[in-house]
Length: 535
Image (cartoon, rainbow, N blue to C red; front, side, top):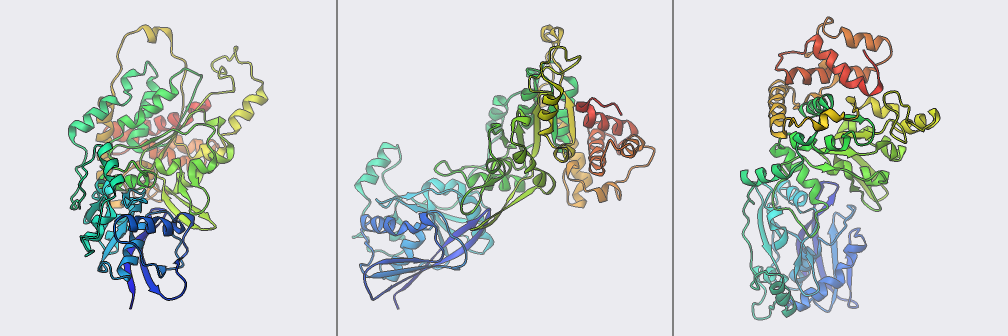
C-alpha cells in the first residue's frame, strides 16, 4: 500500500486544529492532486515541493500523487503545510519512513530551504493541547516555537536535513549550492542540522530596564495635574479614557505614556498577546514573550477592517486585537469614520472579537484599554470663552457627534485637558517620572488582585454589575452622589456601574479598604469633567 502520512496545523483565528496529511501514489496519468479545501497559496505548494524535493536529492515520484488534508471540511490556508505535504508524499514513495506523532510547520523554497511562517506560536500551542508536542519548524521559527511550555521543538534549515532524519539515503541528499551561498552571505553557518528543543530565554532584567529607559516618561509632561491623575487611575484599574482639549495641550503625550506605567503582563497574558502578534510576525519571528503591554495607534484614516480585523477569506486580526492587554490609542478620534468607531463598542464590553466571513469565523482576544484624544471643535479653539473659535455651532455639534453616545457611555474616564500656562512651562519643576507613578499603579493592582482573585477577576474595570451591587455593594451614604446623577438622567445604568468601578480604583490608589463618599465624588468628576458638568 503506497500511503504516506504526516501532520500539519490549520489556524482559524488563534484556534489551531491538527490536520492529517495523507499521500497516495497510484496509477493513471502523472499529476499532483491536492484535496481538502486548500486556498490558492496552499494549492501552489504542488509546484514548490516538487522543485524543493528534486533540489534536495530526493525527487517526488513521477506517478500520480494524491494528497488529502483531513478533515476535508476545515479551511486550510497559507504555505505552512509545504513541509508536511512533501514528507507525506516521500513516505508514500518509500523514500523515508512515515513519522508518527510529528507535526511539520514550515514553508519550502524552490531550493529546499525551510522558510519561516507566521502564526507558529498558536500553532505549536494547538499541537501541545492536542497531545502532539513533537514539532518540526524552520530554524528562524525555533525560538518562537520554543516559547510554548511542553513543546519538543526540532528545527532545520533545509529539507535535506529533515529527510535525512527520517531515513532517506544519505548519499542521495544534497544541500543546494545556492542555499549555501545565501547562508554565507547572511552570516549564518553553512552547515545545517537539527536544533534541539529548549525554552527560549525570557526578557532579562537588564533588557527590561533598557526598554523602560527608552519609553516615553511621565516626567516630560508639564502641568496637567488632573490629566496625569486620570492617567494613573486608568492604568491602575484598566479603565478607558477620553482626553479632550485644544491642540498642543499634551493629549498625545499623555496617551503615549500610559503603557510605561502599566505593570508587566502575567504569564497567561503574555502568551495570549504574543500569540496574536505571532500571526503577523512573518519573517521576523519572535524570540521571547511580549511582557510589556502593546501600544497601537492607527491613523485616523484607518478603516473598520483595519481597526477590528477582517479581510477576504478567513479574517485576520486588526489593531484592536494587536492591542490586546495593552493600549489602543485613537488620536484625533472625531476624524475616524463613525462606523469604524462604533465597531469598537462590542469588544469594549466583551473583550473579544468574533469576525464572520464566507470562508469561516475567527475569534480574537481584544481586551484593550481604549484612549481617545479629541479637540473640542474642528479648529480646536473652542475652549474657555472660545472667542478665537471660528466654528459655527452646527460645525461643533457635527464634529463631536462623530463620537456617538453609546461609545462615550463605555468610556470610563472623560477628562478635559486645558492649555498649559506660561508659568508652568518656565517653572522648571520636574514632575514625577513613570517609575514613581508605575510603583503606585503596581501597588493598586496588587490590592485588586488580592480582592478579586477569588472571583476570577484581576482588574476593577472588569467588575460586573452583579458584583458591584452584590458582594462589593457600597452603602447608600457612600453612593449618594452617583445616585443623584442617575436619578437626574445624567448617568445611564452602564455609566453608574463605571463610576463605581472608578471609585474602587481611586480607593485602591489611596490605600482605602473600601471606597468612601469622597472616592465616589472623585470618580464622578473624572467621568464628567470633559463635558463641562459639575456633579
